[in-house]
Length: 364
Ligand SMILES: [Zn+2]
Ligand SMILES: [Zn+2]
Image (tube, rainbow, N blue to C red; front, side):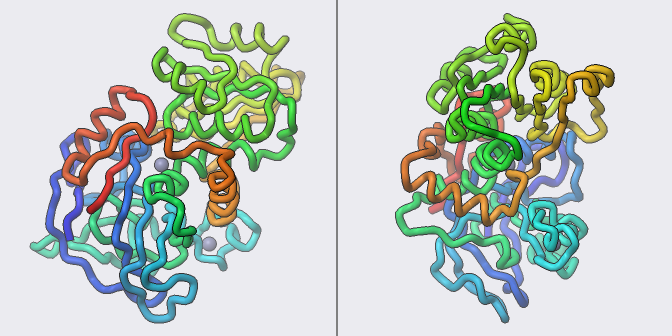
């Protein structure tokens, strides 16, 4: 089995032949179909979000069940699946309280499988981690059955891959926000994969104004296709002042889909009295933000985080697949570049350059 392996940050990932064990109890082997090029992997490559190494990255994927281990009940060989980058255990406190996207067991075991061991190693026996237990930049992956969500036959596999991360995070992060109502005003900072989906989420919620903010005009132009009604280039204009002007004092909801102290402060300051700023993007490890505390009290503002759509990933997938089949969200239109597995490093160069839309690796 071949996979792209990150041995060291800021170095290209070579394609390496790896040995893979059979699926254990509750695990399945997936033949990969499509893998999305998401910024969260890039944060690992640059060292902004350190993980153990060597590691196979990639957490936005779709594939077909190729083999099942003992005791697997929820999927069978041949099922086409969206892959969840949180394979929730179902019995920890977070899972039992309805926040399976934050599963405690999943987080404790991290880049190893649930029993704490590895399924892949190099020819010299070095154990190799799987990002989010997946590591979808590989021809075959062995993962927990809980990571698999079977999908209808008519959903294309590149669409299914994107539903596994950027669509669930972006659309889910908006539609699952408490207090969101039709006619509200929404700002989305950052128009990468998650940002475009947050715009679509705002459109689904019938927002009266959907304002996209980015530093690239070509990305803002692209954002109109996904629901932006207004755009702001924050290199040319102060986005806070511009949003306040457009909305008579600020938006009801502002989403920082980039994840930085500068963009989160913009999101917070662009909300109106009683408004909510939602942090969706992952900032570099250790970064803090300054928030005006008196303003937060006097203007009754809310600052909240949103991870993987703020809810059970499988429930979010169910909704998204319905929206997709009814033509209410555009996922295919986001896929602007297709690559082979051995072009993964070039795919990340395109992401780092800020090109429009999403790159997807398509497997044979
Ligand atoms: Zn992602
Ligand atoms: Zn759990």
